[in-house]
Amino acid sequence: MIGQQIKEYRKLRGISAQELADRTGVLTRAVIANLESLRKDDVTITELLALSRALDVSPASLDPRLSDVSDQWRHGYQQAVRDMQVRLLELG
Image 1 (cartoon, one colour):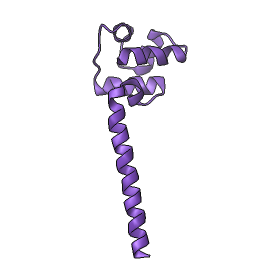
Image 2: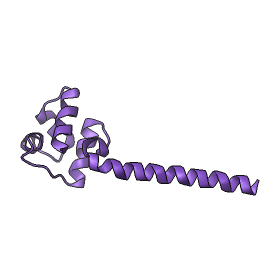
Image 3: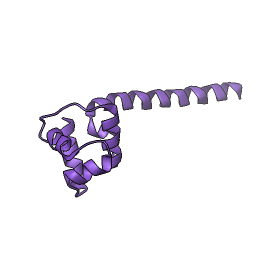
């Protein structure tokens, strides 16, 4: 899952697996290759953040399981803003 996203974004940016590994500073070309070929399917938080920075995408773009967390945070923020607006109107 994450490997497919990595490969897609890497190719869109026109960089090699070695260049991506160099950009992350924490992963090797072999690890990138194993992720993209789905031989490896887990990454640490540090690796995920390094990959997202190197590819200039959000971590949720690489791991769709994170999109729910992102949506929940966004919904919570929007609700907090609405609550604040209501409270300000009440204080009037």
